[in-house]
Image (cartoon, rainbow, N blue to C red; front, side, top):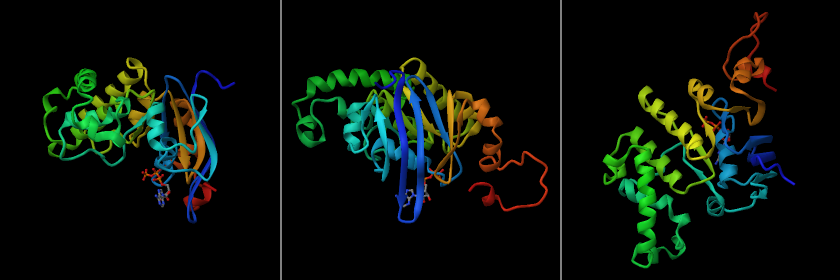
Length: 273
Ligand SMILES: Nc1ncnc2c1ncn2[C@@H]1O[C@H](COP(=O)(O)OP(=O)(O)OP(=O)(O)O)[C@@H](O)[C@H]1O
């Protein structure tokens, strides 16, 4: 029997691209209700890990369970239907569509008609259903404070607002697990504070479990329940934010901090085998 508090179980996942080992034997678990962050230097394998969970990449080894169900070979769309939503490191909105329509796209997994029979959806058959969904979408719009731009074309918005709309689209799926790839990248301080607040509320009030990749250590340490550190595709640490901040291996390998008096100036790569 799987642990009922465990939402996501990743076991021994390895992923290579030719000779590049993006992930090597990575194992971790995310519990229901957690904000779980994945950190590490550029190229450490963070996005690859998220892509393995969302189904964009298929690992060569290992298994991924969601709510105790094996999802390793499942297509991304089926994982969405199961309750895994995500945002992307680089914005993936439909630039020519309005904010509202972008968010409604995020909703399509909850509609009886999906994109395979999409024309039916976009015409009239699902109009009643669409009305109901629009009401629900309005809640999301209110929550993310984007009512004033609901009719704006997504491509005309500032970067910070587009990130927020992308979050709205992912939330529209009402996922149990939401994967956020650098939700604060490129934002100013005020936008970051807003985004941090939305993530906390999604977690605490909307009950979503969050797996987040983020480079801003202040934010990560403030809002995460637990943190995993990747380096060169391997897990080098996992624990509470304070434990991670105190971990000598992490300080050396990730934060580039020397925790001891240097005796010789060895090249950094020798420290991380
Ligand atoms: N589709 C791909 N094809 C080839 N190599 C890839 C692909 N995706 C990732 N990689 C390689 O896998 C390694 C891990 O990349 P990944 O993007 O997962 O790291 P990351 O920790 O998310 O980095 P960043 O913080 O810069 O986004 C890198 O060496 C990268 O070049």
